[in-house]
Amino acid sequence: MQPRRRIFDLEQRVFRSDPFETVEQCRTYDLDTRTSMIIPTQHMMKILAPFCRPTTKLLEVGAGTGILSLRLASLFPDCEFFAVETNDAFLTVIRENTIFANLLNYGGRFSYEWARYSRLPVATASVDVVFSFCSLNRWTEPLATIKECNRVCKPEGLVVLYDLARDADEGMISFVLQYTGANHEQFMGAMRSSFSVAELQAELAGVSLEGWRVTREGINLIVSSREIDVSFTVGEPGIYDNIFAPVWAETSAIV
Image 1 (cartoon, helix red, strand yellow):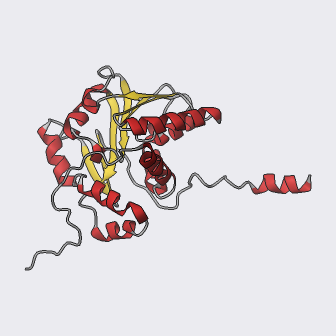
Image 2 (cartoon, helix red, strand yellow):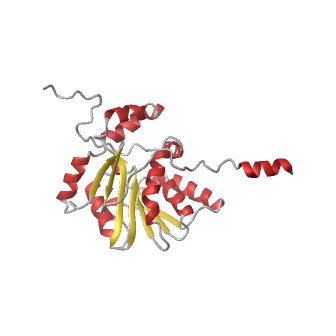
Image 3 (cartoon, helix red, strand yellow):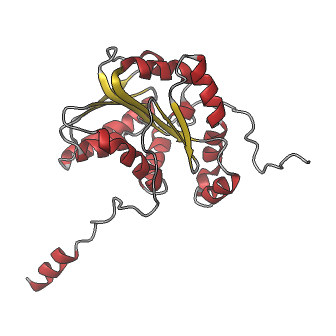
């Protein structure tokens, strides 16, 4: 039997250094997360929402532009969100987004700072939920960082890491590539730097975290410190549902 022919060279994980070197690149990525990444962002928010209870403390590791934590903070004002990022250019964009959110009174309880992921500036067992979104593929020390996420999380808490799955179906990868446009190389670089399910399961077992769950949903890899619902249906209510308010428009027309 002939070996299955693969379209993409994704058999081996090839780590790349952080491709976001300028503030403009980070601003472009920020725009992408609000447009072409709507579905995965909604998916991550749906995963986290049930755990955003009053007084909950949530830590985002590798916050990128901070947009996910800011959105959650505005939806759950009784929660406390703290984000860390190592990239100075991203920190600039986080600051811009935070200022804008506060101007619109949507800032919520959100703060951030620069930090090494492998040495998080957070006390042991002090956080209810630790999460990351499409950041794992940028981590220079992924296993050390995952161990840190486990350290700062409360024993009854939750760690959720959401990233790309290098062993995703190649038809799905081809489909996504139709919408990446000029970001084709960046997307494929992130794919090559991501983990497969079996790889990450083996890596977690090597650091005594074999009880963690590693699942693949479509093109995404979802890691959780315990079993949770990671299902998602495309077409669920989204962020654009109430942009146009027909009732208000009709009232204005009457006036």
